Length: 496
DNA sequence: ACGGTGCCGGCATTGGTCGA
DNA sequence: TCGACCAATGCCGGCACCGT
Image (tube, rainbow, N blue to C red; front, side, top):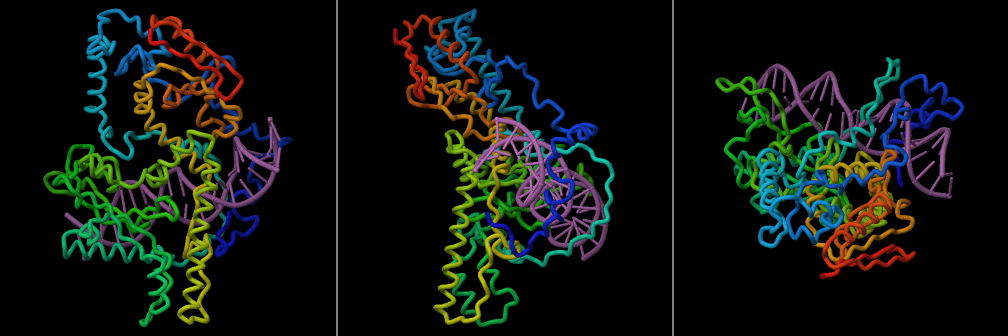
């Protein structure tokens, strides 16, 4: 992967290259134990023989009934005891659920929708209170350290910063004149960067003096997310404290937030809100928030929320489409590492094509002494930065944590007639690990006859439990077969 | 050889505050 | 009401070393 060659890091002065950085040598471990270390703490404390279920798809409340034909679902198959609950077993509408169960389910769903203030936020669906991104980099307090290092010289302003400022100024001017950005009038959320083709023409045929003529080549799409100007926005957004929020201008540093995407990243520009404590008569609590905050997004209509183009995690943002691809690929052998490679390859490929077009255009327009096209990682110009493996793992883990309750419910409601316990060899080898925790701890996956959602099991005991669960039902018996292939065993729940 | 882990500087991002 | 400044926070990524 290419490094930013425009700002070469001096060897021995940065990060792990510094003296004392990195994992301590083995023979110095005894000395390292003198100070508290994360490695000294147990990551988790399961007994060695204890079965640790997969963290993501485990039902939160094993006693909670699920919708659908309760005798014919994954959840019922895995929890046969639940089918023998006391009370009215006639079921409602043939669902197999008792009246009490239906009432409890309705109460639970109602509680979620009424009490979870963020339950309706489309792109997050739930907040991750404690991001794993933060946990993984959480550092213990360290002793005072000398601060003799000279401050590095400040970088000159980058192309994208100048471009974003021009976009912000233009948007502000458009709002002053028209009441909304012109991109909204064009039925678009984005201030689109010029296509490379037209950017090259503008770059090589310019007639007026421009201090930074190449900036246009390195522009990126900017999503203009101004909640108060979107459809269905309330007259005033409400703060957590219940008082109204005042608009508090645009961000300046940075002007817009970078969102990882393919083949190039884009930027998300929004404005800020404040619960103004200086407001006369109705002074607020002073809380600041971005226009992309769940607090703000949650007060927009659902269809507007759905239009939000990114998933924002603490100090990280990734485009919706990229995360969808992660969900699709991470569920199989295609883990975070190859996915990071994929993104990197595509971004490099895109950069190479841009460079090729640049050189060819310079030749076409007869520019002999054209500047070199920016290198891939040049922070002042092209400024590409493919997400790393750990970044993708962190984002994905946070996303799954936020959505676990919804995935649990979906999986629990799936019908099941044939259960296939799928054990893929080398499975764990391809699963992403994160600080020693595998994203999927499952070695086995249970699928229904339509290969629908995997139901991870941490060991063979759960497969056996499923089999016994079938045995216990009055559905007519179980046919079992086992093989040494990838699909270890298939159980058919006969129709009776 | 490959992947996991820990260290730590740079800087992206946040949010408090104040002035126009 | 809005824009802008600025300090604080802590995430991101490169590197060295260890384990398998």
